[in-house]
Image (tube, rainbow, N blue to C red; front, side):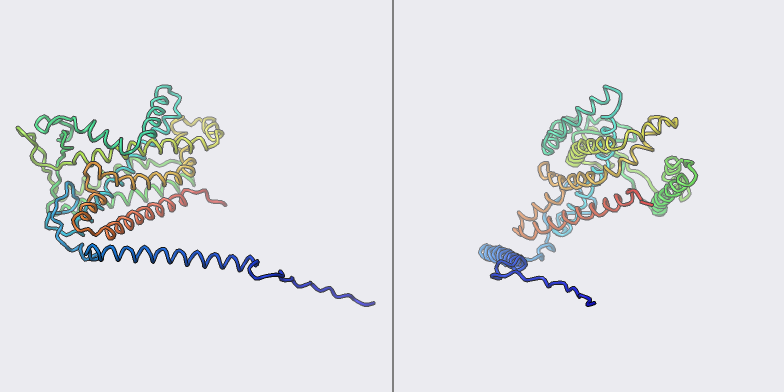
Length: 397
């Protein structure tokens, strides 16, 4: 009996011209796209170089070592008109980071409060939260900045009629005056104790979470953290002989003397970006809470957990997995919207860079610095939020 051997027929190559081969056509179009793109970039670069030569403008970043020749309204580091352009850009970058960090922190708190308020069973709270969201979401952010700058802060009393606030603070149309800390010898121990307390609070929170997962018992993390953050620096401060004093602002006949002042430009930008972005965060929070199954709330109530604890311990932790990804976009928008500070004269990166551009004519270099800085800030924020999102994700067993 003959045993037949079956052979697999070879794939026959498509007959016809090579131009009908899908692989060949794919490679051809990709190469053509790269060639066209390279030619376009070369044309832009060549045209830019020719225009710079025609205008007698030297390219490069050597101008950053030149004397700035202008002052900055608000600076976190020492700066005078004799400082360099490079230091001026650092001042602008720090001012941008200050607005972004403070705005993100405040917008998150307001957004969570308003988002939860929209789901409140209290009719007044729910309607007020709805009105807040609808008003700020439908107004351009630049208009909100002008509202705070010209409509609120500009009509505050003059410095000689400053409104007295608690803790020796004063508010007027030139900003918020507050006591200025003066660090003497030994003050670094107090600062070091503050950072140690923050790190210790982080480990306490980790310990409390693991203990609750293992035993179900809750640990008073909030009060322990507050005790560490307030108590440890305070004890260190007293033990080292109170090395930190305060220069308190004093109301004079015509002006305030002493202390530090936060200008109206920063206040208006900070408040505008915080309240504007909080409206979008509120909707993200509301959607995230709505995305949690209603059975979770019902199960918590069946166990006798109070509504407030149910929201804080059951609903919100699950909603965070839905909230965090779109929340990242709002943080990026707030950081980029800080460039609107140029409209009210706040010395952020764009405003300082624009002044340097007008003085030196180095437009390409300044724009390149703007692009690199904002791209770096956005990527750093995205990386951190992606890490945090991965930490909050459900772990499959």
